[in-house]
Length: 322
Figure 1 (spheres, rainbow, N blue to C red):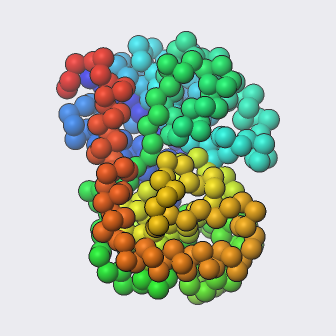
Figure 2: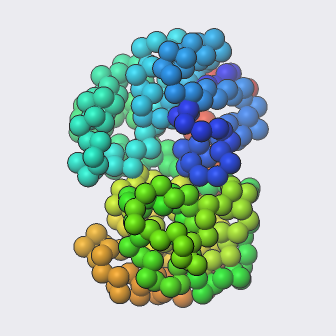
Figure 3: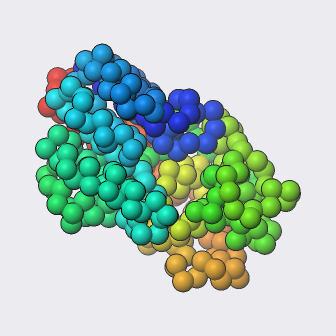
């Protein structure tokens, strides 16, 4: 069986550093290939080129991994087409400056192509959104994002257990600039925008993917207090590395909120810096004592190998095994 993964076309794959969607595409590629499937990545931005390259490969399955590329569906010659959105504001598009363009240019096209595509959504909330807007529920799979259980180093005793890491592109949406006054946070990521002070000793710059695999485990917990997320990959990666997580409401998709090592900061408290500081400290102190439990939880719920088994069972079951 040949599977074509359609990637954003914004940067190389595998990505040398940032780019969560690119990392997800590469994880799918590696794990499906290791299971014996023939996998091709089409990584370009021009829609005519995407269609031509995709069709030239004569795939059995096509999986579109980038919202903007939904427009190529009518031109693809393939019996099975899957589509996944990773748009951070998908469930609350009104919070995005791109709202009108996204709704009419992308979201409505997904609904209009319901006879051609099956949607693989990354959370129940996103599934419910599509169903409310007329997409058939029996053509939707819920397949959450995961983390590479075979690559993340895990330390039972972290070297920087008294510190937290805020890992992600530095931008307004992820709100790092609000929390630079909390001295126990190290910030890691490529700078994009926002009033974030890049001269601060807390800013560690951008890490390579290999550095993330090796060194995230050194911290006590992860902080991600964005105002828009779908199913953030970095949260699952942090859990896989043994870290507790302190997240905003929108960043809590697929998490078991009753766990002691998972703290959700309510939206009406995200600007209360003292509240956030205490929440991070409390979570870190608890999580340090629960690292084995955190790692086991991540393996059972977010290990990519387990999720790939679900993917193959839901999306590839109608085909012969490779």
